[in-house]
Amino acid sequence: MPTARTGADGAIFPAAGVNPVPSARSKVTAGTLVTLALAALSFYFADKPLARFFGAYLRAHKTLWHGTAHLPDLLAVIVWTGTPISFAAYLHFRALGDARARFWQLTGILLPVSYAYKDLLKWIFGRTEVRVWLFRHVPYGFHWFAGGKGFNSFPSGHMLVLTPLFLALWDFYPAFRLVYGFGWLMLAFLLVFTDYHFLSDVIVGAYLGWALYAAMVRWLPEAGKPAA
Image 1 (tube, rainbow, N blue to C red):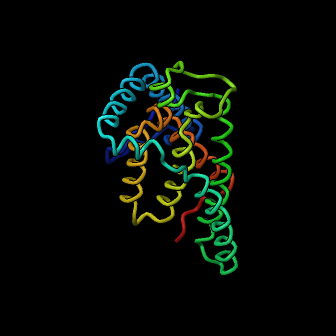
Image 2: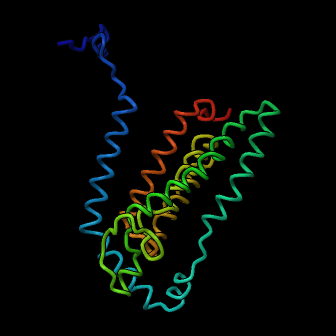
Image 3: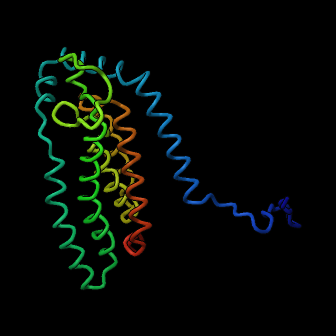
């Protein structure tokens, strides 16, 4: 069995044939297992207590309750306006030979693909929405292949669609990473705080968004290189 060797200066070198860097597949496997564990723990132990806690808080503050009960769903607007803008910007910057074309190519593809992906998954899982479970007493859990109004909770579409966008900004325009990180965390918190989603919806939505971004970068290597 190959063993590591130690250099004259005390540095440790891996044995020949041993790759010290985890492969992309091992990273995805580890990420998947961690996400499944967190989602399962959340589903059985955290989702319902958090939903009840925030639901009670919101109902005790009438302005918050009524304001969050009728939030407009702007995700479709973001996707269907962002997609043509992204492709137009991509064509413009590509014609100029500008490296920013890569960012716009990636976002132009990710926005509609992630949106369609979340719609498919919501229909497959058919999870009861938080407020429907809390106040209409519909059974908690999944209603397989029955997604639709009142059963669109899992996974979080906002996290699935917007996480790749945050990641693209993080990679291509790193100067504002603190802003992106704060915005992403606030989005996750508000989705749970407003009883718009269960915590496990947010966890899985974020992971799927990351996985989709990583796959797209691998599939489109030119688009996956950060701009200079």
